[in-house]
Image (cartoon, rainbow, N blue to C red; front, side):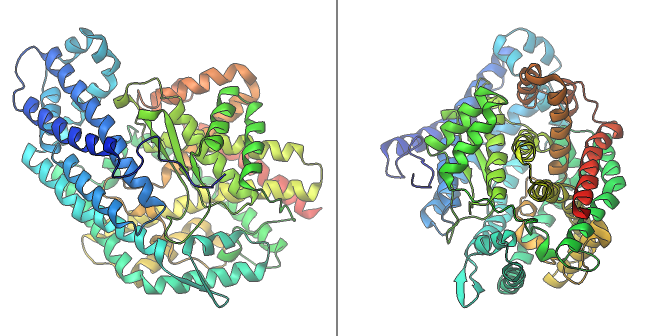
Length: 585
């Protein structure tokens, strides 16, 4: 087992004749689509079908070309060839923006759209996509402007985002006389040695001084581009644009946030209880947020992690277990941290080969196993879309974290049930509460921070000190007295890649949304058992074919009711009480 993912299922390399053929095919498809968009005349159903088929072909070829380069660059951000190829490919994609705008405008302005959908089986499969295009028509700009914005984003937000990723993946970190990577130093937050955790935290903060100015410029530039784009399109704010693109109602977000704010004091109780266990008075210092409690220090090799996860998921669903086994056996996963490799973890879906690829920075802890389960949950979500046509495989940000968090719950619940030692049971419960605190308190702080950045950006350029101040204010509001205010993390704005996208703002609340939705779904599974599993898979598939609220209704859940979110939060509050009781013992 090499520990690295395989991309041979796509291409052997940039010299692969198949890659060169697909590059030529991409050019031909771009020309064909431009020609098609210049002559939108005739019977509506026929025109729409021709455009959809061309878009399917373009999606397939660009999926392979772009993801191959993206995945190669993710494990080596200094890969100049991949960086150059991505630039070429994004220019080709940008050339389709004008023709795509013309085609979408044709659909948006078509009075007979419903008749066209009903007249053809292919269009019926794409009914949600076509209705969404019509709904989006209100925010479409003219062909030339859309084309220009797409082109400029390559050297604008796209380039700034690449800079942030490059700097954070290559910045050297000095730790105990040696140089290491940022991803490695951040992993030390889980080390059982308190001295290692504190020194790693201090080394992490120190390394940001080398790159903070450049990354601050990146953040300011990206957010200004987003604000200007919103104004041009007619959105009142980036948040409104995010909710529109997410196919989610503002009432749903407000219900979620209201419930989260109600339960923040409960999470602060947990943080202070953990602080006492670790010998601190008052709030918990940031460097001990992820400290393991009670000696649950089981270590896993990658092979052991695979067998462990397959065994657990077999108890839930054989199809999920089979996909996880395939991911380990067929090199879907790039496991280990190394210099130049992007930090964190992600899952990338490749519909053309009906597989996913998972990037991890695996260090062998139980937390790393849970992270693998999380990313493989994304892969299972994708797996449930394998039967869809390629343009029916995208789902919005809020539901994106549902299957991943559901997997986490399966893994941690099984571990808690299997543990008879009270101290180890406490450690496992604490591990889950630690993660839950991230999706409630930390996500809320990120939401507050991004809201503040967008609010301020029109009036000021925010230098690193100002961004640090804003981040600290957000952390204090979200965590309250649960954390030691003299040991927070002012640079969380710098290391989180979610802030550095021109096309995807507010990638924070979806984690809370997905986490709490998953807990509600798991509660249904505990009541209904195996009978729930087909319904769960149906909901995952529905996320690509309907709005967020309608997808939840597949499981009978009304997301605009704060009561649903409170029920999921109360389950976590009960665990906090259990943790405090075990601490007392």
